[in-house]
Amino acid sequence: MAAGDALASVDHLITQEAVSAYAEASGDFNPIHIDAEFAAGSHFGRRIAHGMMIAATVSELMAGEFGLDWARSGKLKLRFRAPVFPGDQIQTRGTIKKIDELQEGGRRITCTVVTVRNPSDPGEGDSEEVAITAQTSVVVA
Amino acid sequence: MSNFKDMNDNPVDYAALSAGQTVSRQVCLLDDATISAYVAAVDDGSPLAGSEFVTPMAVAALSVRGVVNDLRIPGGTLHLGQEIEFTDAVRVGETITCAAELSQNSLRGASRILVVGLSVTTGNGRTVMTGKSTIAVPA
Image (tube, rainbow over all chains, first blue to last red; front, side):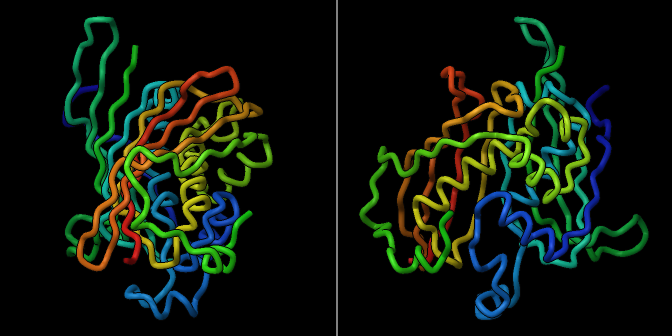
């Protein structure tokens, strides 16, 4: 593991069913997520996924790479850049930015993570849009 | 469980909230049903999902839920940013207390920007998460 290494990406299709399930599971019933009529009158024009639902993919990526270390020492700082709409395909991907040896033992791994909606493959043009930018870190043995 | 009809019937005067004020405190049992519903909703494929440990973002989501419900966040509110620091793993079956304290309240254009500090502890007083949510409430 070294600076510049890519982390295993996480892909999801965001459906309205999943957004509604997230509202139930999280207790966040903001109508912008679940009420089509209300959302149509918002400046988004339609329902959007919960930010924390999309942010969960950042945690999923980090937990996938670092397991329990992520739950014990993970740090996450993110900005929501654009909404994700039901029907969107999203991809969360990350890169190791730096690795610091800690005096008390172990290493702190700092990563840059981004979530995009409608990801495009290299050479397919640039249709994707950044939904989340994040910096994460985790301490490992 | 709150709903937005109730919230709109009892609006909060956001301009009157001041930094340092505790705006939410909720106790949640992280039982298997609660965590399984969360994992299914986000389709978490990480090794922590389905394990004896709570997938950590579930803790963060529940702490944000306290803010959403106790502050009666209105429709049209935007979640601008989120900071989280996990400090210990939580096992399924543990009970957590989610507390939130307002750290900033300012007007920016047509929005009121609220910055809320989050702290989550377990029943034995172990801090398992701290964080900060930045939201824009329609002014």
